Image (tube, rainbow, N blue to C red; front, top):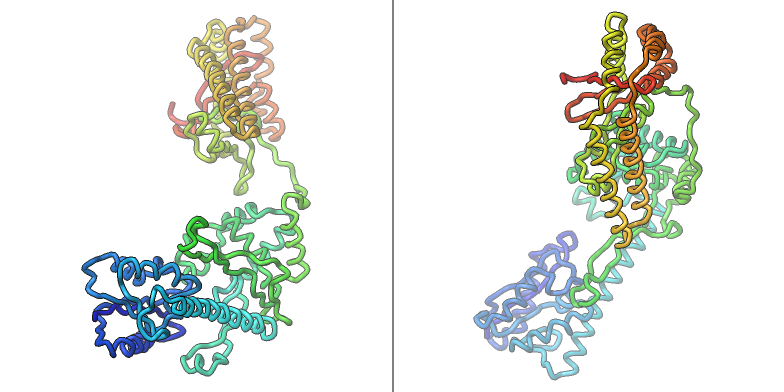
Length: 549
């Protein structure tokens, strides 16, 4: 009679897989020897948990597939240790397949083949499945109880990667004689002289009112390697490009920075893969435990990086969430932007905001991705323009345009510009109004379809602002009048000293000059040029102050 041998061993750390396979096979051969049985196929899983159903164990799944094959080459299956093969109700879910395909199942516990019609055989196998489940549960309880005692009473480091700010130090041979004979050592945490000050900085900045994202930005801007970049050997699976909010948050929530060993912060939960098909079994997910179930060492076990008071203060702030007090530092100086409210983004038409970055004034346009998608605009996440790069060309353009030798020519050009209507600009403004109306209709339809009302309100406000600007442009283009002689004389007197003002004046005064000229700047990031328009007393002077056009 031809047999297939089936078995399983869990992990290589607990038992030698080859030794386990040999004794299970020997037990199987002893069972089938009286009937002249011969093992012609083998299905033995290594490193598979008994809690996994047969369909998720590679070799056991191969055996189930072989049952369906009429040319399988064996008439029966023998199992040397049913407690290793079946867990919980797995026998009841698997044995009907053997019966259906006419393949006998032999186990030592019943002295031969299992009789499908025997209640006693079925009861024995169900008992062994329950014993298997109970054995696994008892092992988990013993291991967890031991680890809890080691953490609480000994403060032992129980393995894993050291927290950022610490590194592992040798603490002597392992107390288990067998493990010590294998050369295994105990470890403790010691301060990392490079990373520990960064942890102090993170806690201090958070207590000072900065958020996760702001702290991460500051660390990245200062060129400080993030945890995965700092320790590439243990974090080769991560990119290590920059600090993230999650990394800052994990550091702020880690109680081991107080100098005590803390265990049981997380647990492994077994969750059904498919609630509609329980036979698929479970998958393991990590879940956070409540703080009152954490196991703390009775005394400090390694150098502290933060005080317990600071740690508890951080926990109180994170628990408050958005309700936490927003503490801001008082600025020692007021920053002034020369072109505040005067620079527009050439991609979306919105005003660019003043932004102090890397020690310089910038103008920034941040355009949300959902706005860009809704309006069919290709727009980077952020567009930046440095003020010092812009100010020089703008001042040069203005001083040249209003220089005494060129002033008459400039005023003549402005006067002639008032005499005609810019048909192209007028058509563009009308097209903008029509586009705004169409987009508002789409937003109303999206609102009726269930889109977030707050998002629709933001989009609508943007479009209405754009339409108001276009309407103002039309009124301006269609309502101009030629300059009178008195207006030209007044303008000459007002602009005669512009060169001196722009070069020597305080930044506040310079900004006032730009406002008086009604200066409008539009930045085109693709061409890296800025289009400038000066509108003194409602009259227009246009030019390009950057680039070659």
